[in-house]
Image (cartoon, rainbow, N blue to C red; front, side, top):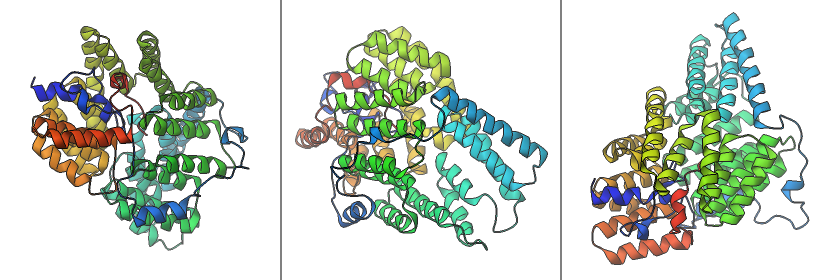
Length: 476
């Protein structure tokens, strides 16, 4: 392995919120450039972001407003297991309907929605693939100008297929029966999502404003939170999550747990580990049994140096779910602990799962699979996956991941050019500056390397904490 390959494997914290993660113990060659994940700070406080902030969320929360953890919960399952049972029942009903009337596109759509609902809990690629097939059948059966167009657009976005969304939305807009304002607002927000994940941040802001003008809602608030988070406004992101909780009068345990989980991710990204852990635990208490929340809690144990406790928690989750991200987190933990054979054994276990997912829904699997390869597998394959991921969704995270893959393959000059171009946009994360610092260090430019490192530390003061190598979770 090249020195560059070893350096990238030690730089895991910088990438961990990009959709999977790099996580290895620090080395003398790489500790100067290791960061944790998706920490945010302002690069361009431009008019677009200012307008977005003013239009889509309040600047402050009233001191008289009760804390959101005192807001009453409405209905819904009390834990993850109960939610899965309900999701299973919805899928079973959908299966019966499409079996009885496969020519009815409405039944195909409801079946697809049930599958996607379950996939949001289980991250089942089988469900996601089946949902896309059901929607394709529904569109084929529908008369021109009708069909499950908006649901199909949502499904394509879910599996990271950006190209088909515009056509769905064009037909949706031209429907003979005018959609209601909620659907029209969702269509506009989806246009914002496509723009955001295509690296067109100003266009994304404009679409989100347009969506809010039609029908401002909690779903848009989550989108705005993500926009603020990724473009340098973590406090505004937290305010948006809180706003979504106040807007949702039918808030469920699952919904509130997601508010706490995503809020914790924001805090983790700026080095506030105590706050992040408290939020993850609150999420776990609100909606017990959800493997993704449990993985975040286990990760915090690892950050505290409780490696045995974290490993046991990961083992328990894997036995119940078989999630490859959790398997990779365990493999990294064992490597940090110095147990190379166990690390390699677990990495070998997740590799075929990633290969299968790449075969099923490649765009949805690129980012996670490339991180697996970057940390635990083949850097050359990671670079190939990173280029494919960039082609599918050319936004800030994809740029940064491609930069790290280039560094792992000794292409520091190309990596530096990529990140310097990214720095001219509204995107600003610790990861991008960590990659830039590493690239310039490899190119022998210590002045620029140090400057990039300092910027990364401004974003996340704990970016270079040695324990940050254990961070794997925190992506949406």
